Length: 172
Ligand SMILES: [Zn+2]
Ligand SMILES: [Zn+2]
Image 1: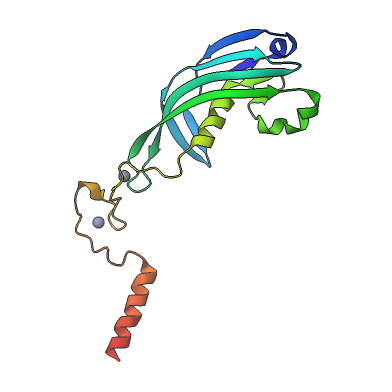
Image 2 (image 1 turned 180 degrees about the vertical axis):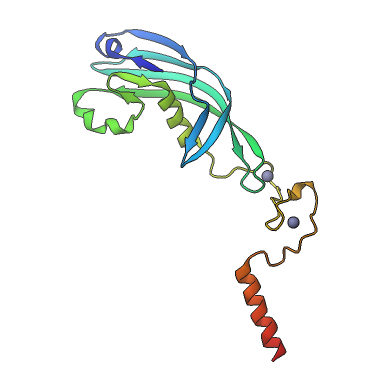
């Protein structure tokens, strides 16, 4: 949704409140898609803060389903966003506007705002549990559900090649 702030930036002491839904089904990052599992409404309080300046306060809570780095099982990852930002559209700052990617012309793109806030909070590592055993690289079984019986001592073919060299060396 786009919130037009033309009036806000030009009317001293004007304040407006908004409660807007999130219209996205997935969060997209580096070609991967993560579904929203919970998406609360974005609550925004906008107030004029001087010539072509708007003070933005608000909050949003939601969660994404992100696969565990080791076993690929989906993990529910919550995001709690508290906003307290100054949108400055005064002429001196026009060049810096690239930072505020969610401000387009004189409007706030609320989905872009949520995307931006998720991006800066996106966890580096996702594990379904600290000691997740992952999946067997040979048969694909989820090792959290028990052993599969595969010989995983040398899952890497390069390691296998090195072991062969040692074997040959011993035979000489
Ligand atoms: Zn896992
Ligand atoms: Zn296996």
